Length: 426
Image 1: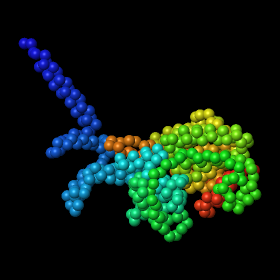
Image 2 (image 1 turned 90 degrees about the vertical axis):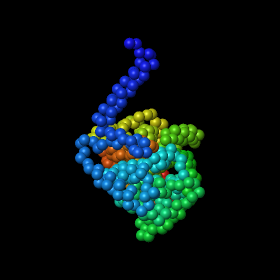
Image 3 (image 1 turned 30 degrees about the vertical axis):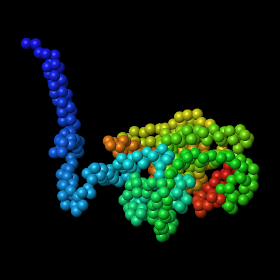
Image 4 (image 1 turned 120 degrees about the vertical axis):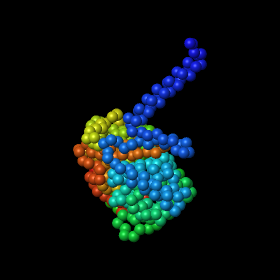
């Protein structure tokens, strides 16, 4: 008997679908994935715990059911937020403030930070002793104008205690639309009594690099420094390069400013030296630190990374720079962290520059960001950084060759900059 073509096609399609379904079912079974359909016809996919891990999740579901049954305001419970909260708690059990789960909104905010534009107060945050601490206020932002300083403790945000908060949680609480305000309960370093500071949020545009070439007598930042009196009137010209972050646009911004410096050098003749300002630079991309260090080093190792699997990666100078020979001093402080510490450590160990300022923050661990379903993200600490001489950056920081603190945050009393200029004149 000959079957019509339409019936043959229908038979083939059914057979193919059966084979496909069987293959998918076998694959899901091998991966311990169970597919079910709820009474509302919603498909739920659950993956069992790995075979090597003996975990009883019955308590988790018991608590879930009790919460949804007995909680007085059950209608306010959000199942998705409950899942995110459970994941956040699991990740927090690693007891590492930089290994964090980011729900979609927080993950997007993190990416905006590195992009260099967002709405908020303009302060880079970290965690120490289970509290939120200011790594650095960004230059020219509402945080800096309000008097927020590096190493400030943020005890409360709008009257909420910050004990146990992660950085993403603090960011989500502090950040907000332009024009709105947030009140931070701040304890300045060496103070005994906290103070409330209300800050009006704004659009934060963060230029990565700022540069100038000036005669020493024309540098207003050192005009009120008593120690600078012997050389304040000198006509020698100094190059100043300030790097505020290692973000998405940093490399392009840097190359533009370096070209400006070289043009100024050609126009002004001999320059006495370069002050490279990494103060209050909270870091950013690892490859950015290698890119910047390669501007000043002809060859050699920039940083070493020891990974969670025991492997080691040595990152070498990877491009031809333009500022190999100019004498230089690097400025750092407690707000210099991460990639900024890598650069400072490399220049110190290679004896390319002297370091002036304060011991840096000590954020020398590597976070690998991973994008998850639905826009969420996971940052896992997967390694630690070491300077070319083998010194650990993590929790130790970079100790300057010349330690000098800023007594006050006055625009005309930058004792660290004055010290850097004094060293260049020697």
